[in-house]
Image 1 (tube, rainbow, N blue to C red):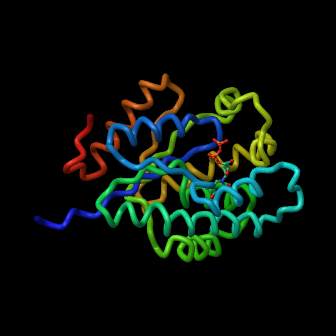
Image 2 (cartoon, rainbow, N blue to C red; image 1 turned 180 degrees about the vertical axis):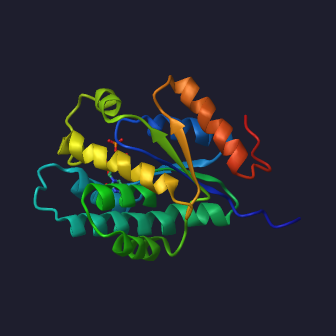
Image 3 (cartoon, rainbow, N blue to C red; image 1 turned 45 degrees about the vertical axis):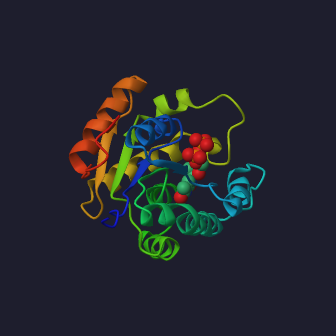
Length: 211
Ligand code: TYD
């Protein structure tokens, strides 16, 4: 028996309300991959997520926020992502390092070089094989967000969201890591088809050629 090849990591990214959670689920089902998310996929992460999203936590500074996201990611990588990849399992994650660069970097204004160092520390150097950006305009994202109580990020308003959208575009245009940009303004099925088409072309799918 040959060793199973290491799994692949695909991260779905985008602003709140872009539809990436639905697309992450559909892609994971199609690939037979483990579906996971940030922040909050581990026991420690559940507590961190609560601190991060609670909008009564007004005193969280930008640096604290970045560190809490990094702590969540470190635990997530060590407990969930890395063991799955090492076992040859594919992983689809709803948010990963790209969200820190877009939200804490472009959104909050923290320095890119410092965030890069923080991310490298948290992930021990693990980077996704592919980032998929579900791209929607700010107004559409706002209209799609659930009407239940908005979290600490969702109360930030359109200017913040626009900086995050611009940030994701900036990241996707860099050659440093692979990004697939998908227009997220269509129906769920249309967007899923575009995601699948891009993933098929950009990731070596041997053994995972769809269901
Ligand atoms: P998410 O779980 O996608 O939100 P929802 O449950 O509303 O779909 O993400 C929670 C928030 O955390 C989201 O507003 C983006 C933010 N976030 C960051 O700011 N930085 C990060 O590194 C991550 C992973 C998330």
